[in-house]
Image 1 (cartoon, helix red, strand yellow):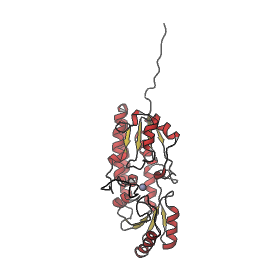
Image 2 (image 1 turned 60 degrees about the vertical axis):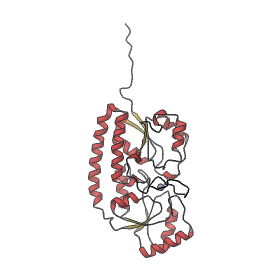
Image 3 (image 1 turned 90 degrees about the vertical axis):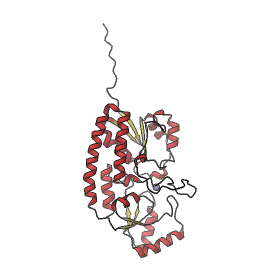
Image 4 (image 1 turned 90 degrees about the horizontal axis):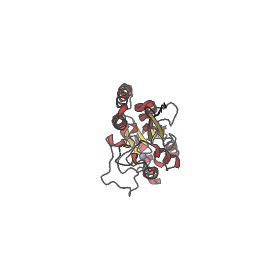
Length: 285
Ligand SMILES: [Zn+2]
C-alpha cells in the first residue's frame, strides 16, 4: 500500500506590501506573525520624490494586499506599480488595494483639484500620519481589510486592533500633558497641519509659498519680516526636505530649526509609530 502525503502549508502568511514605513508599522502591529511585510520606501527617503524601481515592482507582484498613503502622495510611482506588477489582486477596486486615506478626515481639500498651480497636494493634505485620531481610523480600516482578505485569522487581527487601541488611549493621555498650546511655528512644507489641529499649536508661516513650490527671494523677504515681528518658537523641517533653506532662514532670523522625523525609522529610537510620535512631540517642546 502506498501512502501519499500531500503537504500544503497550514496557513501561508499574507504578503503585505506597504509604500511607507509608518504603514508597514501599522500592518505589523495588526498582523504580527501572520503577515510578511515589505516596505517600498526607505525611512531616509522623502516620500514626495520616489521613483519606481524593479525591486518595488517585484514586491508588488507578490503582494496579497498593497497598502498606500493615498491623496496622490505616491502618484510618481504607484500607477506604474499597478501596471507593471500585473498583479490582479492589488488593482484599484480589488480588496488587495488598500488606500489608507479612505479612512481619514482629510483637511485642505482644494475645490478645484488640479496641479496647474503647482501645488503637489491638490486632493488635500496627505501628511496625516502625524495625526493620532486619523491613525486610529486607518488602523480600524486596516484590521477590517486584513480580516476580509484572510478571514481565518479575523479574530487575531481584531484582538491586535484592540491592543493597538488600548496603547493609543494610554499614549494619548501622556501626549495630552505636553504643553504645545499657544506655541507658534514656521514650517518649510505643509506637514504638520493635522498635528496643529490636534495638539493646539499654530503654524504662522511657510517657507514654501505652496506645497512643492520653492520660495522666491521676495517670499523669503516677507517671511523674514513677519518672523521678526511674530518671533515663532521654531522652524519645522524634516531631514530630507528643505533643511538647508531652513538653516539659512534661521541664520537670518535667529529662530531655531527643529528637525522632525519624517517617518517611522528615520531617526534612532523611532522603531514603531508610537515611538515615532513620542519623538515628534518631544522635538516640538
Ligand atoms: Zn507634502
